[in-house]
Image (cartoon, helix red, strand yellow):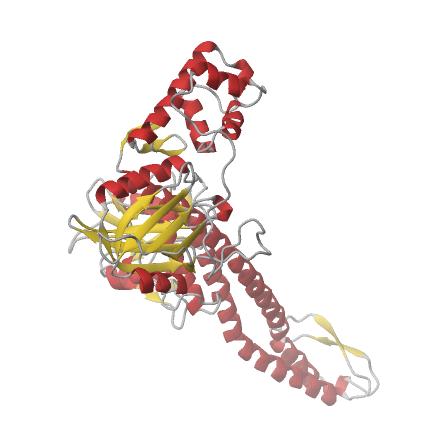
Length: 571
């Protein structure tokens, strides 16, 4: 993930100074421990200013408000206590530092009373609020003297800026010869050498500079030609002029984004939209991957446990199935009492069903009647066990089928766009007792759009994205005359082919819908997948069953091709 550096902070500072000084702070939100959002209002409107000390994505920029209800964490509450209703009157950046200083006062024309320091410094990132004397009033996280002897940061202490940087300050007055001589003194990697020799330089800056100069990241100083040095020095001067004139060119780059127009792959975009989009996407992707892996581990554990229980019940059921054998053997003994004498360990009798001889073991301590009674007793016991095992077996099989279905659902959620659907799975597993609930209020899965496909006939196919959506799609959204599709005996999504009243689906539409059902199944990688379909009115929710489990009748089987799909709409 691309880190915010001195250059990006300079661009943000310039933008805030131009458009948002002064501005009144109306609200403070804090939904995560490392991030706060400040609602600013001025004559041009209102915007949320996000400040984060996330270890991988420390940043500050304007953006969209986070979804859901704020948790009102202590730091956010303290910020509002001190800054609510105050005016942002200045945005300053110490020379060559990755720090922005936001100054607040009760009126725009008076000296600042509070300063909010946003420090974007990797694992040392922090957000600190001080009063006019520099005393720390609130901070995102404390740093004790045991954690850092160089710079402890704690409530009630006087704020100390980060340790001063070493190395010379970049200057437009430095000539190409001087710049080249400094960087060539010790041959080595150009990017690393530039990083070590000047303040304000970052890995992102050096990497973008080399790509803009059409040079590799591995470029060494001793292999540069005169023309390369000239091109690199020109880019160096362009950078310094951008900082001096506070003119920036924000754009998407080949490896992230740029505020200098270097290595851009698309046109210029608005700075804050660029930063908000990039970090929302990157952090969302990281969160999605982490939560998906967690769910997969939970499901593996639950499925292993459920499968083991099912196996045990099936082994017990095998024993219970011997009930009729015990009764048949007892009947044989009772029908042949005259052939038995006390002390026998076995007896061979003619089976009156197969008319073949059969040898039965006997208890020599009992006569034929006693042995028959023992077998009748075993019959009654096995029969009772069979009756009690039947519902347990059905329940265990349903649980395994459900967990396999959820596992398939999670496997099919592949990108950050599926984060809301993944949250729905988490909430579902929490309700079903497989996952400890963390959120007080689960996200409403009804707000998540279904996957939609538009057929050449302009009819629409809808696909559920998790089990709750499957239930909602099948039993609330679809009509009785619609067609319902699902991969045959394979975990997958519910698929609905919408039909107008009185319409009949043609074979081409049915084939498209079958292809979609095949794609949204665990057998997505197969060349062809068996798919069943029937009218939606013939599908019933399994009585007492878990989400997504149904029964159906009058189904037809068709082969679906998961690699041939119609146009996808929206998501």
